[in-house]
Image 1: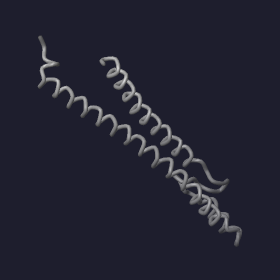
Image 2 (image 1 turned 30 degrees about the vertical axis):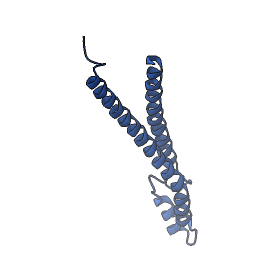
Image 3 (image 1 turned 90 degrees about the vertical axis):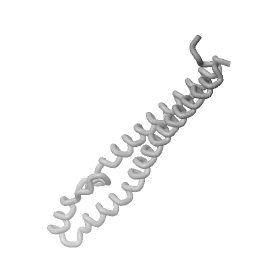
Length: 121
């Protein structure tokens, strides 16, 4: 009985660590993806500065470079924010699993103390 309890604790320990690790990895991937420029004159979803495209439009009437940049930034922003949100959700899920495990462990220790199994000799 003792060995299965240890295996369960080890498995739960790994689950919440994997959830938090995966969450931070997905969050980091979202940030890296969000910092990639969407074009030569365009900004990125997290830094949407397209002044070069706006300057190009000012010099060349009808070029529509800024409009194209903002459309490509909007299109790239969707996967960026999905990855960031998914990373945050995974980290929060890992924290929630850890809190539940701590709560259950504390409850089982209190029950063991009341029944006399965990009391010192």
